[in-house]
Structures are given as C-alpha cells and as structure tokens.
Amino acid sequence: MIPRPFEYHTPQSLPEALALLGAHGDAAKLLAGGHSLLPMMKLRFAQPEHLIDLGKLAELQGIKEDNGTLWIGAMTTENQLIWSSLLQEKCPLLVEGARQIADPQVRYRGTLGGDISHGDPGNDHPALMIALDASFVLQGAQGERIVPADGFFIGTYATLLEPLEIMTAVRIPIPAAGTGYCYAKLKRKTGDFATAASAVTLRMRDGRVDDLRIALTNVGDTVIRATDAEDALRGEPFDAVHADEAVRRAMAACNPIPDLRGDEDYKRAMAGEMTRRALHTAYERSAH
Ligand SMILES: Cc1cc2nc3c(=O)[nH]c(=O)nc-3n(C[C@H](O)[C@H](O)[C@H](O)COP(=O)(O)OP(=O)(O)OC[C@H]3O[C@@H](n4cnc5c(N)ncnc54)[C@H](O)[C@@H]3O)c2cc1C
Image 1 (spheres, protein in one colour):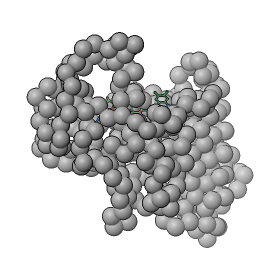
Image 2 (cartoon, protein in one colour):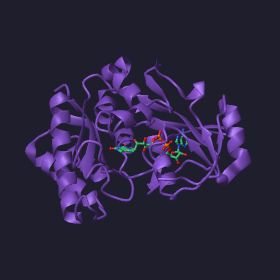
Image 3 (cartoon, protein in one colour):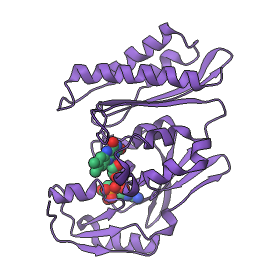
Image 4 (tube, helix red, strand yellow):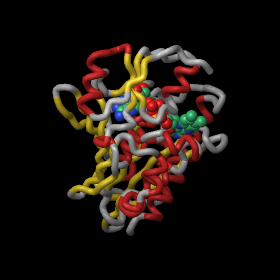
C-alpha cells in the first residue's frame, strides 16, 4: 500500500518533459493515468525516485481526423475514447474494446498511451491496435519516429519504446466503409484482465474475405498476431470450413501461462472460442 518516497515533477510542455527524462534517466518514470504504475509502486515492484507527470502536456491531448487517419493523443483516457462521437462513427472497434477495459473509475484515469506503453500481455489495447493497423508516435530528444503496432510489443513489459522516449500519439488509418470488427473478451468479472480475448477486423469483396487481421490478448508473454489464422481465411469465402481452420490456427499460435484464470489447455481453447465469436460477429457486421 505504501510506495517509496519520490520527487514529483509536472512539466508544462513536451520539451520540458523530455529534458526531465534526460536529466533523471533510469531513476525516473513517466506518470500517465497511474493505474498500472501506482499499483506497482504500492507493492514496491517499481521504486522510481522521480515521477514525471504527463498530465499537463497539451501536446498529448485530443482526438482528431487528419487526411484519412485518426490521431489520438497518448493521454486520452478510456472514457474519452468511449465518449468520442468521431470514434463511435469511424472506429467503433476501439470504443467496443475500451468499454471492456477495467471499470468506470479506472477508465476516468487510465490512458491509451499508458495501456500500450506498459507492455502487459493482459492489457487490451495492444490487440486492438494490431487489429486496427495502428502506429505509435514516439518522441525523443533527437526527434520523432513512427513505429507500427505490429512488432512494437516484444515481451512482457517490453516494447520498442526507448527509455528516453515519450509516446505522444496513436495513429489509426480509418477503416474502409463496410469493414466488420469485433473484440471478444472472456473475463471472470467486470474489471478483470482477459482470460483470453480476440480482436478482429474483416473486409469482404465479391463473396470472399478481402482482408482481415486477428490479434490475441493474454495468451502468451505478449500480444499475438495470428497471421496463420488470417491466411486460412484471406481470399476464401467466409464459411464454416475456413472459419474453423482459422480458429484451429489461432489456438496453435497461443502460448498461454497457467495461473488463477486457468491452465494452458483451457486458455488455448478460450482463445479459439473468442476468435470464433469475433470472426463471426465481424463477418455479420461487414458489408457482404
Ligand atoms: C482494477 C484495474 C483493472 C484493470 N483492468 C484492465 C483491463 O481489463 N484491461 C486493460 O487493458 N487494462 C486494465 N487495467 C490497467 C489500466 O488500463 C491502466 O490504466 C493501464 O494499463 C496503464 O495506463 P495508465 O495511463 O494508467 O498508465 P500508468 O500507470 O501511468 O503508466 C504505465 C506505464 O506506461 C508508461 N507510460 C505511460 N504513458 C506513457 C507515454 N505516453 N509514453 C511512454 N511511456 C508511458 C509509464 O511510465 C509506466 O511504465 C486495469 C487497472 C486496474 C487498476
């Protein structure tokens, strides 16, 4: 319950935050919504000497559309995602996913950028980001770089973010009209991390699956893009035979760790079931 003492910084701009990060290096941690970092500090799993609060940085706020791409500031909270009429209209998968994250209080604080940067395989945004073909804008002292979500997550709590970088925004290409989508999440109760979950986007053309993306939550040491499963359906009619094969391949891609949510076999089977549900719902929602 009681974290170690730390020094608290409230930079007013992105350059100021980067300078503080540069000055304190490994002894500092960025603070966003605080709903993963503070619990870890209270258990003394994390013991930073400096907390750099990103809450005052206007550069990390907002949701806007720019030339076919959605730009979402890293400090956007889960509730701001859910309440955004732009996202409800242009990117309903993100809204559907955010509604299944944590609980109302946590969603007032927890941020999109924090959920992604944390790199926890239990977090839901990594799979949503891969299904949506998102990219992340990372700012360092030397400048900005943009990295795709697919490949960003390299292990438990490990991402491509460098220690002196700040994620400023997420960019999502607006899904083409008629794209089906679904986030299917199995959890023991509201506010729990997934036992298994599957994020799907799917587009049909001339009676066949034109393109699709499938990403799995909490069934490996990091989020898993189920590319073999995608290959089972791409270019094929959406029927029981091809959907079943995709489900089988999604299960084969899992590498779950047994814990209180279940053993390996159960989690693998549930990843298959969530993928089955997400695929069928995405197909029903697609134009075909
Ligand atoms: C009861 C409870 C239930 C939860 N259930 C779920 C759930 O079902 N699904 C889910 O996905 N999450 C869940 N969470 C986690 C929650 O969504 C967190 O808010 C989220 O994981 C981290 O976001 P944050 O903004 O709180 O980040 P913080 O806790 O402030 O930071 C997390 C980490 O990311 C780093 N970081 C934050 N922002 C940036 C940035 N812009 N650039 C670089 N690094 C950054 C921090 O330095 C820190 O290492 C739950 C949390 C609680 C307390």
